[in-house]
Amino acid sequence: MKRLPELFVFLLAFQIEIRVKAFGSEATFQVPRACLQESLRSCLAQTLGRPLNLSLKNSSDSGAFMSLAGETLVTRDSFGQYRFEEGAVRVEGDFAQSRPFRLDFLHGKIFAGSGAFSIRTLGLAPTKLNAPGRVWISNESADLRLVLRSGQTLEVPAGFEVWVDGLNSNSEQELGMIQPWDLKAQLRLINGFSLGSKSRRLELAARLKPIAALASVQATQIYRKVAERHIASMDEQDRIRMQNAENQRQAKIRLKKLYFDRTFSR
Image (tube, rainbow, N blue to C red; front, side, top):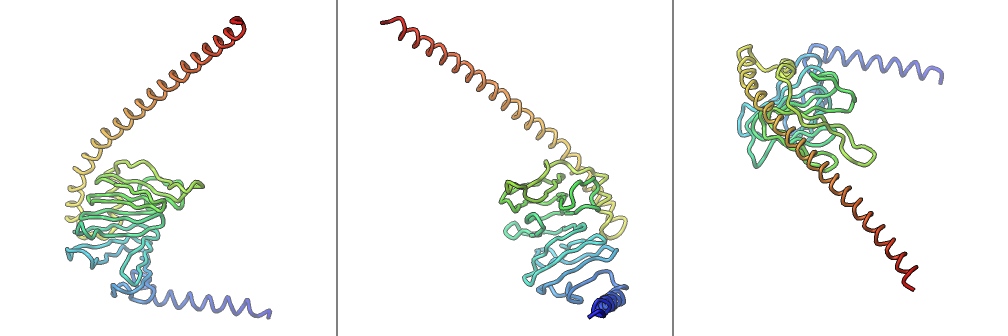
C-alpha cells in the first residue's frame, strides 16, 4: 500500500513524457489526434505557442476561416459547432444572413454575418481586465449579435467591443458598456494571429482605420443621447418628487380642515 503513491507519480510522469514527445514538434495539441482535419468529429485543440488558421466549412465563401492565437483553446462537437474556451480567436468570412456563423463561449453565443470579429480572455486583451472569467468581444466589420446566458440579446456595431462576465446573485448578466475599440490596440491584437503577408496586414490596417473613426463619431452621438435621456429622467424624477410633495401638502391642508370642521361645527 505504501508504494501506491510512488507508482502513481511514476505513471503520471510517464504519460507526460509521452505527450511531450508526441506533440512537442507540432503547432497544436489535439484530442483525438489530428481531429481538426475531420469537420464532423468532436475535437479539443490547443495551440502550443504559434497561431493557427482553420478553414470554416459552413460559409458560402471558401476563404472563410478562424484564426487562433498562440496558447488558445477551442472545442468542437460532432455536429461541427465550435466553442471558444480561452486565449484569442478571430473569425472572418462571408456568411449567409439566413445562416450566420455561430461561436459558443462561457457566457453565451455569438452570431455573426459577413465580416470579421474577435473574442479574447484575460492575458491576451489589449486593455486591462479585472476578472478571470471576463471575455471581450470586438466587432471589426460583421453583423454581430450576442445571446447571453441570461437570455439578453446584445447587438455590437462594427468598430465597437464589449466585455461579458458571468451571472450575478440576481441572475443578471455582468457586462460592460459597448464602446469603440482603440485602433492601435486592435492592431496589436490582430498581429497575434497568422493572417498572411505584411501587405495583407497593411491592407487590413487600412480597412480598420475608417471603421475606428466612424465608431468614434457614433460613440459621441450615442453617449450624448444617453446623457440626454439621463437628464430627462432626472427632470422627470424631480417633477414627480415635487408633485408628491405638493400632494402631501394638500393632503395635510384637507386633514386640518377636517379636524377643524369636526371640532367647531357642532
